[in-house]
Length: 127
Image 1: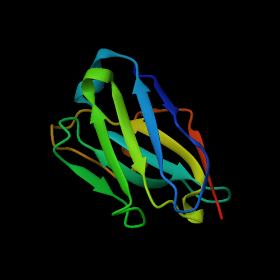
Image 2: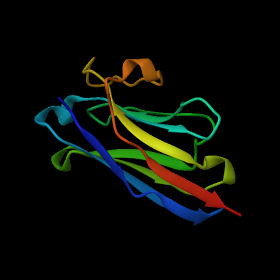
Image 3: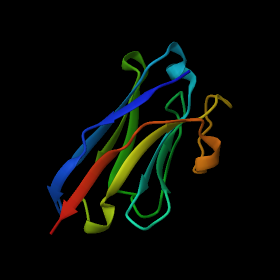
Image 4: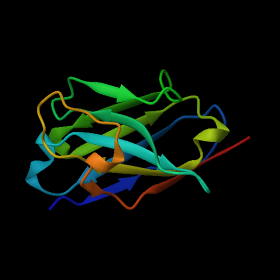
């Protein structure tokens, strides 16, 4: 069983940066593809970014490409989401999630693929 805990959320102004962290329990983290999703009030959960367990492949939603960077440190069981040039529309609860090991280069933008989810961390961007 993998447990995920997000941190790093908060209230920032438009244009600011923020780094989210997601720390996992369990020795399997190093071979699990990881993803970040977000859910704004009144909207469905949406894909933000994903990274393969080898870190050789990353994938981003079009809305965050060029602004957000996903990375991981398997020695620390942690995945990060660096968010730059934040916009009002980035306001949401951000969730990290772990998918099954389908290969060293596997990533997915589909929430249904992910088996384990964190509790979420709130990111609020103000003008």
